[in-house]
Image: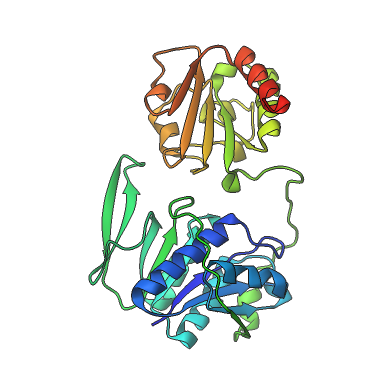
Length: 321
């Protein structure tokens, strides 16, 4: 009857989203009067695993296998299902990131478990089991009831927060039974960006649209992002025109982000873009058009030319005033 959370690592390290997930799993376990089990897959140092105990991990199950250092949703779903069955867990939680979105449907089929994706809070009710999530591109909320014995949830970023709850932890090794067939698909190489804040993990995002008028005018956006330690992003027309890569496209058909602070620079505020940023804690809009729709969803607005506003804002931040 325990709660299991899958703690994804990045090159052997955990990120803020992992600590939020562990905090969430601990709250769920307390409500169910059961244990909080955290599953780590891949090679992670014990000192890094012990950090999870600061947020309520009662037991950490570590699966160390060099073949598992590169994430495969098929293989990870198999490993997680074996641990769930071994521990007789009734509830599995994952972060609603790229890995969680890929693994959870496979896991749902394997465990015959009901799945609620991108939940925003702890269950409204435990019997029946009802959770809250956004629908219609963030324009409404839905309450989803899961009736299966086993249940799977993915947690939206920045929806629950990080809560310290220091406990003594037991780290247990587990070796899953994996056939050679499951490793038929192999990753030959990987590429990663160096010295760049990843958009999906960023607490601050500086995003710009066609109001910048040209790809040649992007330097002020880069400078502000650098001063803030932020990720850069863009609207769909910008990526479609080739000004920026599609990996930076934020919106309904691009990446959905939930940073603490989102700058919308020269972005009109079309409904498709707003759908991708609606979970941002604070939105700051900068636009020359005072009637731009983006101002209706922004917490703060600046009516002005980005080529003038951004350098001044960057200068203030760099000066520490």
